[in-house]
Image (tube, helix red, strand yellow):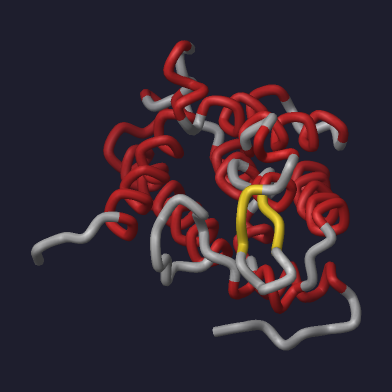
Length: 190
């Protein structure tokens, strides 16, 4: 369901991605939203294009949108967090706010990495040839004062994180992200 387009991009953003409100720390929530606002503005996007943009330019005939992917992976992360906390209680060291913020910001750099051509096709932008979205996302998050623990999730969620020891939150996001990517990007016989 697409949100009603409002004059205020922020209101549309909050309606389209209600998971922002699940970040309990109000300062972190506000900074997370601000990073998204920065990315939309810097990327030169309009909301209608964002709502229809594929989650990856590397998936042929992708019918999953960027916003659907961000929200789905965030919800999977929350579900994993809740199962682990229910099963193991405090023996599982997890910060739910860092996990949610990281999940919402991990792919925000795609709004800079990608561009819309004159024909309406979404492709890698010139900047995308030099920096992938994890690097862009970390830079944008750092600019807004997002904590290093969240920046770590952004930085390590993809292949760039293979050389690092991922935090618990990053492990959860990494696997949720690839579950979604693998299931929607590959043709399956079932």
